Amino acid sequence: MPPHDSSARRFRRPAALFPSVAESIPGAPDPSTSSDLAHDSARALLDGVFHSSDPEVVERVVSLAADDGLTDLAALWSGAPATTLPGALWRLYVLHTWSQRHGEDVVHRYRAGSRTVPGLRYLSGLAEPPDVHEVHRTMDDILRGAFTGDLGLALRRAGAVATIVAHGTAHLADEDRDDERTRQAERLLSTGEALTAAGRHAEAGLLE
Image (cartoon, rainbow, N blue to C red; front, top):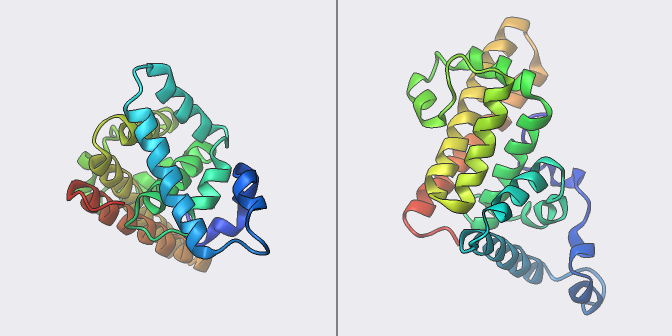
C-alpha cells in the first residue's frame, strides 16, 4: 500500500523501545510524554548520525530503514505533525519503506505521472525513465542525505517523488476507473505536500 499518514496503526506500539520510561508511567502513556519522546528520539538519531565520524553509522541507519529496524521509532514518530522533525522523518521512513518493498509498482506509477509535473522530475533526482534499481538507489540517497547533508533538500526531494507518484496513481485510477487507486493518489499527494512543507521548515530552521 502507498504511504498513508494514518497508517501508524499497522505498526507495533513503541513502548518496548523505552522500557524504563514505560514502566514509570501508570496506565496509558501521557500524550505529552510521548510527544517529548518522539521529538527527543528523532533529534538524537539525526544528530548522532550527522556528527558521527564513522561512515558505517550512516549505512547502518539506511539498512535499518530497509530491514524494518526503525519500526518502533517510526511508530513513536507517527503521531507527530508533518512540520515537526519526528513527523517528517516518519513520512520519509514510510515512503522509503514502500518504495523498497514495491519498487515495480512505484516505477509504474512514477512513469505515469512524470510527464504531468516535469519540474519535479529534476528535484526528485530520478533518472528518466527510472527502473527499480534506480528507485531503490535514489530513495537510499534521499534517506542518507537527510542524515548527513541537507535535511531540507532531502525532504523536498522525497516530496517530489511522492507527488509525481501521486499524479501517476491518479492517471492510472482514471484509466481503470479504480476508486481505491483514487484514494491512494490522494494519500500520496498528502504525503508529498507534507514532506515538501517539512523541507521548507527545515530550510528555515523551523523543523523541531
